[in-house]
Length: 329
Length: 192
Image (cartoon, rainbow over all chains, first blue to last red; front, side, top):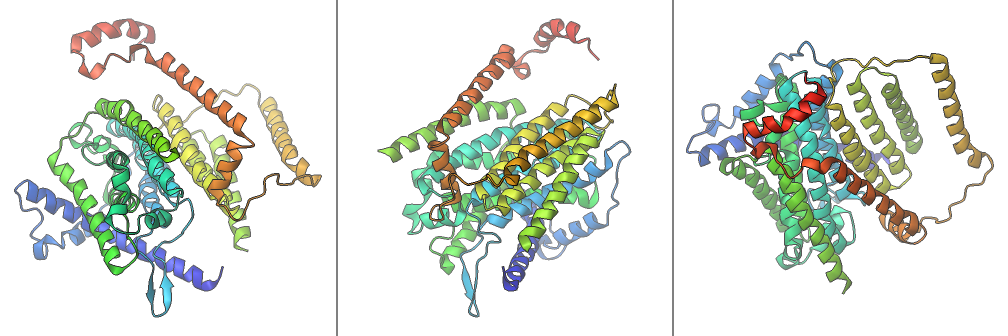
């Protein structure tokens, strides 16, 4: 463990934090523009060219707004809950290979903070901890809407974690490794080798579960505006509310990376073209999150549970069994 | 050196977290501290090179078990302190100390007698995850299968206990039907 390694790791952490915090902010801009386009509106257009500086204006507003702590809340938990959401979202990034390794001035850079050999398990585990943000925020808020939202988030997360795990099991059986780098290398050799062709069911299941894990429409019932106001975020103001937001958008980016790497070949053989392809794939999945929000209504909580336990889980289990049988013979 | 620093850091953090869990009167502090403690325990697995167990520790304990506790906490007001009924503090104290001494003795005894040896030392050629799979499906196959059967029994039991009215959906029923169905329940619960 030498000094160069420590400096390199810290530099990588800082870069990832900065890029994805900025991307989370820009993500809100993209979301508003895409939604506006689909709903025949203009979206943000007054601040800066094409409304681009709207992100900065929102940021300044959030940072300078008064941090209101309501009277009956459990103060320390109420304060720490948004930090949990944002922190776990970024912690999950530690095991994601964002790019193939490249060489700058004779020094090889691996754009992954910690190449542990249980990468995908770690990412899923840490994303699962993200549940504590909405859960604790909602329960500490002394507000009925927040409490309902906390209960919903716990139910949704526990249910859909089962789907994520079972859906990933089949591709992992084929690859024989839990490392995201190994999963990527398994699919080297062009579009025909992508896991999505041999595991289409797992791909769809994981994609559906990704919507539940990030709490996006059509599974947005954790903070469903028209029935429980802003759910766990109802009592929050200023930057604490903003941290929930950053966590949600960072999670969307990271889960897009995971889908692209596990099912769609990731960065391929590691050339520049492969790296650009990965960015395009991630951009598509992020766009799809926004697209569904504009196009689909939300489902009811009982429909969500029905979908999870009575439809998706049996399909996922069948998929694992069939994969096992095919691999055996 | 880094391992030593990490070990003492996480040891202190773990102990502090579980102390809060036991000592606090506020249920939300307890559950947050316990979840954090479970995560800090996973750090020891990572320090020991058991990556798979570390990740599983986070997923199972923090992601699933603690989330279920949190689900149970929905049934009471978490913003108020829980007042425990302690009838005899001496007995609690004596039992607590005895239990602590016993746990320490159990773990120190094999270390003190130098009687620890790894029956299945880690093979450097195969990965950590594969090593667990090999041990689980050879040496520990019977306990592993027994655990699976017990979990299945628990799951079926849970479904039988909870599933009495599962074919009816409250959301899809008409208002008056729900009223007539709940009459018998409300009189028992006392309503509030």
